Length: 131
Image (tube, rainbow, N blue to C red; front, side, top):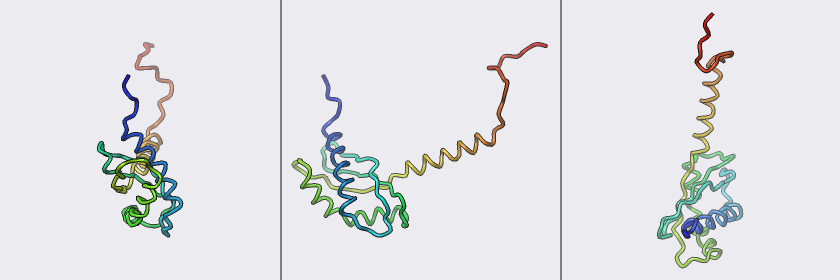
């Protein structure tokens, strides 16, 4: 019976939980807003963890927010090492996740299209009636 989740999936999930807590307690950056981890991608050899983040209520551009988080990587990695039980702690890289913004933009476009097209009432699936 094959395993449902690989080791890298389990470690990525643990990193996501622990890093979310660490970001809330250790990162005190003005203008950063609330940082949310949307996903953690871990390489197969567990050497690199790419952490996708979104920012709510930030006053800086996302690129600057990711740079600000990158300054905290050594301290966060040290704390993460205390919490995880892995032989080699992965290198941490932060990346901005724009999927929420893209989703909101697509939703707005779909809403705009639905408002622009007139409602077709009373049509029956393409069947024509003969008078």
